[in-house]
Image (cartoon, rainbow, N blue to C red; front, side, top):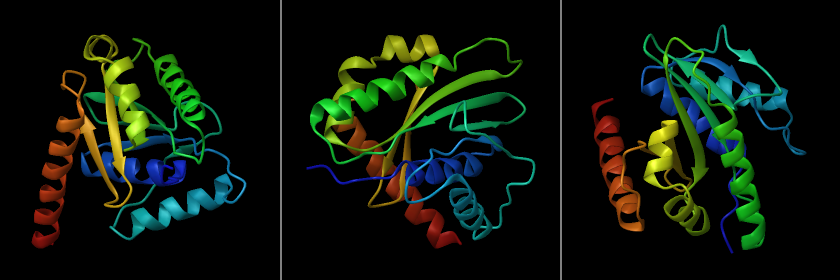
Length: 189
């Protein structure tokens, strides 16, 4: 059985990753959970960011739309986050399909900035299969769709650009590179 990963964990680590990449948050739309409402999630995200010296001033908190909208002077990101529950393979596929449909629905060309769509999901064998076999490179390139894999044990986001070749091996290699980069940055600070 797969390890359970909350959507909040995926969202909060993706927010941190976007900040570290130089993007300003515009909107956050956290999922409503039975054990953690939107207000509690907001407080936890603000505390997490404050612990590294960042604030969320000017961020819109909504109950609809992309889970995260972030931008800089050139690009805008619209991110759909999905957690990993305790379910059968068919349930995981259904959740993946809904997340993919949501992120595709954010596609538009009305923005002045270059649009980056992203699907942020936990690293998991079933989700990996869906990405490798159903969200292939031509589709990702057409939509400018990034895959942001969240490794829960390491609390790290590993990004895959639309033109990346994604395979089980490339995922593990990219994870190793990201861990090395994380360790090097921790030694500097």
